[in-house]
Image (cartoon, rainbow, N blue to C red; front, side, top):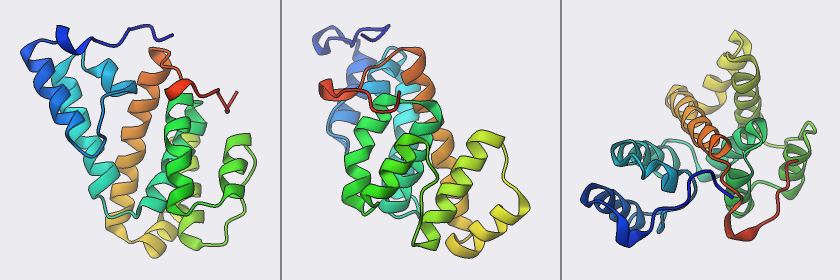
Length: 182
């Protein structure tokens, strides 16, 4: 049970309703999880959802690589909601079941594609060491390009905010799904 119950749509202030409708009518199609928490502070929700929209739908990273980075973030933060929400999207985007399972269990995934490997290594290193080495940075720029490295860094920051919100407010996995990370 979340520490903050979801706001009832008929009890929203005019600003909350405006942001709610902007989120619900966009590519997400609904307001749930951390967005529902942020709706308590509608300006935060508005600005965060705009950043999230860019990171998820408009960045230079392919959905396959974005979803891999999101799963890596969810695992580091033990963010069950984000894991449950993005695991099926990652699989649909082309991340193999074996890689997803290795990330879930904390094992070292075996990658066949250089772009997936560097996205995962970069993500894991930034999250756990709070920086990336010159070698990992150079490899990321070589494989992905500088613009994608900037977008990847932004995406990791955004999904860290998501995961922090999920963990602080104890947002359970969506749709009654069972936790998989603990």
